[in-house]
Image (cartoon, rainbow over all chains, first blue to last red; front, side, top):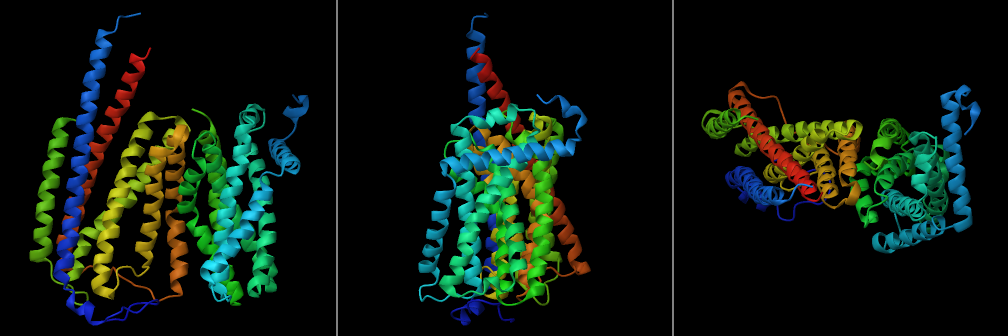
Length: 67
Length: 236
Length: 220
């Protein structure tokens, strides 16, 4: 295993050996999936809010007496 | 209106207008001193804050001194740019400036030049201060140091002036200015700081590399700035 | 975008996102030197490419907005700006996960990651400017996007010069042919996904713009 570049040395070297690759990979893919789904959900919520606004405004416009 | 305007080449008009804006700023400042005095004091106190924060044992190597210089300059520039445009906003003078026949680009260059002068004065204070406090041999390669400072300051101020002008009517402007400015000028601070550190370590080749980088950076952003200054600043 | 195009796009993206992991984990060989953790790259690299793509899309939209007062340009920029931050975040989160295994530390000032980080910060500032920039919010943000895009090569060069003094952490090697199907499938899948998200976000932005118009109409 190559030594890390300049700066602080890792405090306890054996820690790196006990961190397996598999959990890191799983977390990485998990983050990507979670982020994408979260973003989709956020977009969905904003769209729903917009839709109620549009309905409300259209109604108000229809009720307005034309000048 | 100058009837001779049509016969004078555009470049001359441009320079003349920029010069007029520049002169106006200096005159106003000479009377009110509201930009320079706070900025100079701020620069000095920042150096001391850094000294106590980073160089607790009273010694500072090349890296630290360079960092203090450039981060200090960044902070002082933010203050200077903010105050300059605050003054314009309070006097409603900027709108008047934009209504003159002078091209927007000329106004931008004139403003930029006056901001540069203010920052240069702050540098004239901070650099000797650092030499005195930490014995840093900053004056050993004076021309390169001057070039670094000049190019770095132009980079900082070109972007800063553009953003400052855009933000003039925004409340909480100073915070927004910092938020927008700092990410954009990281390469300048990096180049300036590393270049100065190289000078202090007598690595002239390294310093020259950073100087070339700053030159390229400035070229890109001064041109870009001139081009989009008008749409950025006009109140759509 | 028509409903049909949208449905096809969604289907392709979904299929791609299912196929990619299968290829990555079942067919692509494990990298000799880096080991299993290298698998992160199949998603990390496409996210980085999308981050840069949307940077330039945002800048283009911003330029159109600034120079030609194009409302459409502003909408495109708004959507693209968010996606720069989204995919940038993914790059910056997956990179350290790899680094932790390869170098024992979460952050090693690798040239590419550091440059991506700075670009990401510029676009986070972009979103903040849009939200909190006051009356000049859109113009300020547009300026940020244009400058940010112009800085892509400059940031990289400056960080590169900086890091040549320290040992480089060269990460991406040439791709073994056994890895290519997995890589390009992931690339296509994530790109499809990114374009889909962009289309959704853009549609949202246009709807929001329409709502603003409606507000103005009711106030007459």
